[in-house]
Image (cartoon, rainbow, N blue to C red; front, side, top):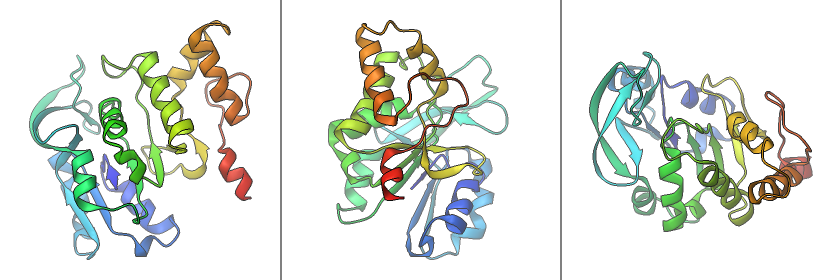
Length: 231
């Protein structure tokens, strides 16, 4: 499931590089209708489906904003140049209606900050339990509700409650691997400023201990302990 399909780079990389990709049914969601043309070569692929819709927390319509000709978001910003309306779906409900626990689901989310609304809804509905692998690009600070508390609690639930490591996804589709972890460098930067004995400091240390590093610096790779065990 390709959340934030952009110009089909993620889909194309998946089909070329993911193990047994030809056995997967693929679903791409992209809110910018200008990008639908990039998916047309794949529409004839019997197992591919494209949706000009926003992954969201409810069915209906939602405004989206074109920021730079490349990215689009459901968050309003001063640098957003254009806005339009697109259909939205309750992503949790869509998952329940289309899949079952026995399905192997790989979810990629690059939805420009909407993950901070979508993921809590998935926790609430327990649809996150349907996901076997999560590739994501977090956008800490991109929306008004992306506090340290919310971002940290999402990481804690993914890692410790659902055993679902957030794997790194680069928007260019050129840096996608099963062993690198996505924590968002801006969040890590802010957490590193917290006092070790504070609530945030203790919780951050637990995450650092899990991934096996003592101090975060921008650009440093973080690796999955589960993938290390496999090797």
